[in-house]
Image (cartoon, rainbow, N blue to C red; front, side, top):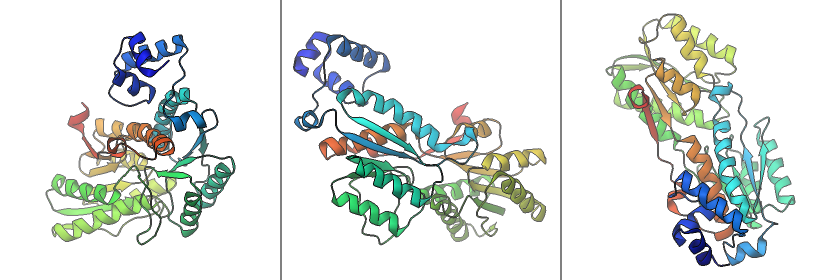
Length: 347
């Protein structure tokens, strides 16, 4: 049965059927469910392309999930992972198999080992998020790219400046821009005057460093009335986050603002509230998690900057799938608009 015949039997357009089979956007949840049910009832096996047919039931795509070492309600990769699962379940009806591997330590050596194991299993494409930028990791990826494996970076996507490593596409998250936006917002919240503190997570997680470094640069360049304290890095684990926040506020009781990029931001915002300074110190957070949104709703922070993590997970699966089977990707699939949430925007 051709797809044209199937669309006619189901009573939908050929375009709608194509969107459902290929798990593309543009079809409502109810209609998608109805079409999938009809496909199953009719016993139709999607034949997406000639290449897909020849590789059916033996094509695997690997997904490496980053390590979350933060409180459950603030975990970035868990949100991404759940969305990935939803997308991949729909695509598996076409014969592809998605292999998920969670990182435990988050170290580069572990990531390299997973890549090598996936390559040995014959996996055709791998999606991954960078944690550290190392030559050994770049060399490993380049080696397997040369052997025909497609790679798609997501979330933390930037590679070391000057490296020869290239990707056909990646799901961009521009941490430098995020940091500059955070600095501009904070300057407005505090009227361009006063002391501010910039706090980052582990130095090995360069996403945190890009944010606070770019925020620091903009504040120093554009706002002479703002005194930027020396950057506080390696805010990890939870006990260190509270100790550090206490130290900053003990030394700077007149602190006006904070930009926080670390997994234990909730410990910091809770401490500020505990000592009665909520509303007196303007706080900007990154990454739109359940905990961050709760802090925003309760007035513990003024804004959250990040991308839609659910959309990121969904689009990551679409992109790696399309690269493996079509060697091309629709531009709309990998553009990730930056979001700025204020309390007024989620009420």
